[in-house]
Length: 423
Image (cartoon, one colour):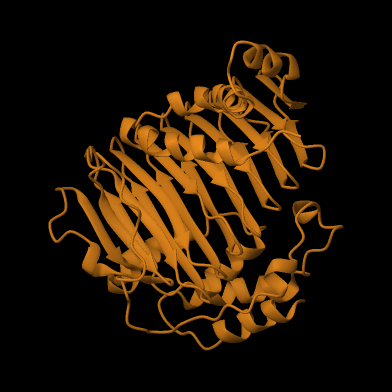
């Protein structure tokens, strides 16, 4: 066990609130969980030296300085802002008037019966195999609960921002619950200043026939450590469409878990990562088809330059009763440097006999002939490189349902391409 994990366990032992049963269970599991090494499959290509040597400290009950950290403005996006600063929820940035049918509450302010319901969901959505999810279980303070009432369609997106100051360790956690027939758009993003360590987890309970549009932007770069996950539980005829965009940092690790708990659930996941320098980005996506007639479509694309490293582990598990499942997983990668690295492992585990499933992964270098062709037509090498790379990623950006978010992220990706060099 690392000194950092020992410290985390010690800090959690002094916390006593409505989450005490969850904290106690997490601490019990953590005490039995060995610190990952290169022999630990889930961390085989992702060393945790950045965590072990982190000097970031938690800040308890401090005044929130919103003048230092504020969410990035997104043109043409009018969202309901849920802002965490150094792990503390900043209620001053929450609109006093929410749409009818939408509720946002800190867990400690809920009625006892609602807290019990939240604890039951916490035990069902996020798998216990996530080491840092357990740490988040034990240390997150201001746990937020967002609920949409039955049949209510919320047109205004909800934006959950996790912001951290330099030198700060923070842990944020949100539960989003969509009742039957409801509809909601949720945007998760994060930002940090210099050295920091953040864990941020959001769990989604998507009721029967409910529809969730989801985005996660992990755009931190630099010397921070950012670890988190988005976890979804889909019931009968529920639909979700998720888009993930990731840049790298010292360590950026995201886990996405989708559980088809009900029949005819439909999940779409489009993910893209763009890495440069010595950045590391690790994406694990797991889909559990536990019920019949579910559909999953997963497209993941990555571009890795210089000495950066990317890890993708995509697993689709078809349970014995999940007959008539349609599932497809595709991971495509471009390496822009001989020293760049991608470790990809798509997996299919099937126990039902009446399903249609496919998976595949490719790792390739940029088409030198296409690059040469564009240069012979008067296009500079750097612009030609951007044109070819942008086309590779732009297909997924075009599939983003929210136009304002697509227009916001597109120039950032274009700028990212301009910084990359083809060797």
